[in-house]
Length: 387
Image (cartoon, rainbow, N blue to C red; front, top):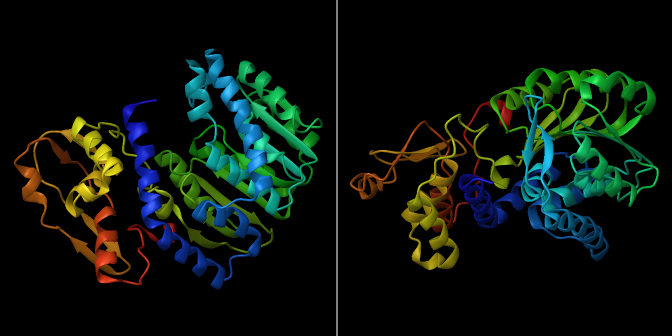
């Protein structure tokens, strides 16, 4: 895992804690405007982090297996997005090729809330996400994994929870038609986490659509992972046949009804830390000053001034490179735009960092909201596809 990834993960945690009251208010607005209650358990968990003792037992069982695999220290051959085999450590695969404990619990709560009995997962990896999915009402599960090594472990993991589950070693495109005809006659839940490219993502949805039950849930992973995935999501969230489409940052959730209906759109991506539509190609250069600011904010928040905290969050979510220049922050609060917070001069003389490209900056906005006692929800800047 790169330093950039580590810092981004930490930043998202800090940010999500800060904006949790706003996220809760945003979620309450969703219920008032007609988002079905079936979404309530997973979304309330995502925003508030609350679970039952029984749900925590499910998580503990899956995470115990994850920890065992990580401790093994063995390398794994995994399928890259280009289709080739690459070697990765057990730690990298368990932490970054599989869902996190939080997103795994989210998947479990989705399957539980939708009472999903028939589930197909495209891209099973080690079976961590699969184990969460089959831990509720699942009666028939089929997972597809392109890496023979990962598929073998995934099968063992999933079968330990659901003896009727099936994990197939194959590339999705090679087995797609057989998968649909043999196992996917009527689906309650489809989880798409394979071949993160524009055309395959849309094609998988087109092929599975006739086999989705009314009310079925379709989950698209990594919708903000790349420009191609974001463009695919923009089409999917407007697709005829979906009744509701939710952008949650990592996941895109769509509820299927069929017919000529078009989806109502909702987004919590801003509040879960996905501020960009997709990463820039040059993302990932985080200097020592950015890391120092992260540690300062974690160890002693009182020492982090409003401007410094703004710089911290912007550094992590923005595109940093060595050089000279100023800081420019732009925040969109509904239809009011606040910019140029007067901290450019403070950093201009240091010559440490410069921001490249425009991005939505959020840290400062929440300090301003707190000071002003603003009640309006903070909306991310972007086109209508994000709303």
